[in-house]
Each structure stands twice: as C-alpha cells, then as structure tokens.
Image 1 (cartoon, rainbow, N blue to C red):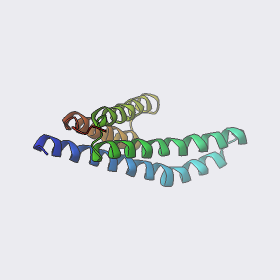
Image 2: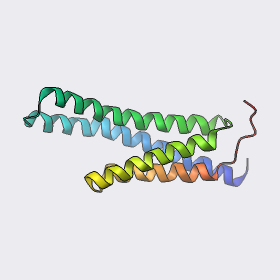
Image 3: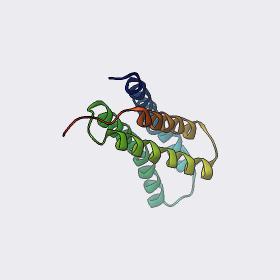
Image 4: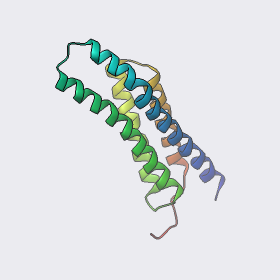
Length: 132
C-alpha cells in the first residue's frame, strides 16, 4: 500500500466517522428539538408526522452513505474510488443545497466537512487490483 493510498484511507475513514457522528447528532439531538417545535405549532398532524419521517430519513441517508464509502474503501472493490466519490459528492451537494436554503449552521458545516474528507479520500485512493 502506497503512502497516497494510506492518506486516502485516512481521509475517507475520517469522513465516514464525521458523517455518522453528524447523523447521530441529527437523529438524537435535533429530533427532540423538532418534536418540541412541532408540538408548539399549528401544523396539520399529517404534515407533522411527515416532517418527522423526513428528518429521520435524512440521518439514515447519511449513515448509509458513510457505510457504503467505508465498505467500498476498506474491502478494496474495483469500484471503490467511484463509490467513495459518489458518496462524497452526494453529501456535498446536499450540504450546499441545505446551506442555500437554510443558511450556514453546524449541521451543514459538519456534513460539508465530511463530504470534503470523503472526496479527498476518494481522489487519493488508488484503483484496486481486485478482480471481483
């Protein structure tokens, strides 16, 4: 394993850890605040339930993207570079759209930094020689 590949591994592992931590903060910390805000609102109960589902689905999406990037990189599949970059760019686009609609806050900054780490890691890892 070359130095470049080791550095890439460090970057995408760190990016995945930051993304999972962001999802945990979102689902456990943010969900409580969302529930309090929704209970004080006069929003239709059906829309309240839908917003709760979307909120939790977003956190789950981050966990899945982080796990896909980790599995692709650590198992050295042939498509690992593409999969890591796909996960990184998907989260980066999500962070950018979120920042443009809601403004900058800690959530966008966390997933944005995770996305940059994933992209850097994906650019640094070498293509796998695996034949699977």
